[in-house]
Image 1 (cartoon, rainbow, N blue to C red):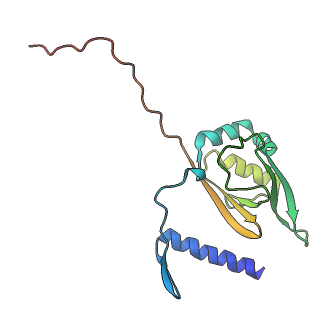
Image 2: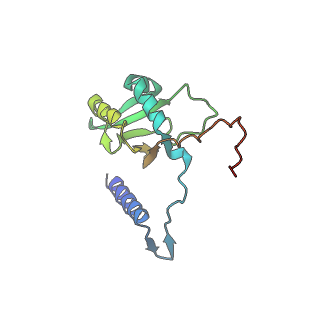
Image 3: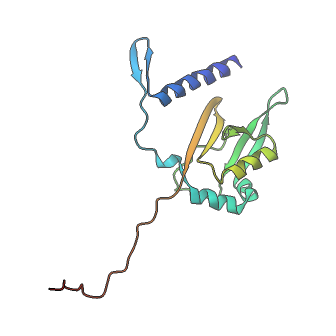
Length: 170
């Protein structure tokens, strides 16, 4: 437990340093943490994709993601371990940042132990600007966040005029 607490504190300090753009001084050198200039498309979800999933319903989503509850030795809920992820998804698609075997503990900073907690999060996705999963992978805590963004507008298309332009009057 002490090791987990120290890891969480260390990650919090690291994320805080990144967020404010300051340098971190360490013995033997100096490391500057710099935010990435371009967000990666792997961590973006189009709003229309979220809206499509919401329209399909929570039952549809639950059928796409297999989970099993993980309970500690003292009968405390630890999270849901992913047993399958979107089985219909094309194999040639880009890999997801979450994997089968990961244990999801929270979504958007909220617990997911009970069905009503999941449904509250599900409904909130309609107006959410991000989707964040607190997971444990190989005993290491991770935070995976996707930004939810509107798709860029399609370029305007206009039909070419079939009439000849008029000469200016003289």
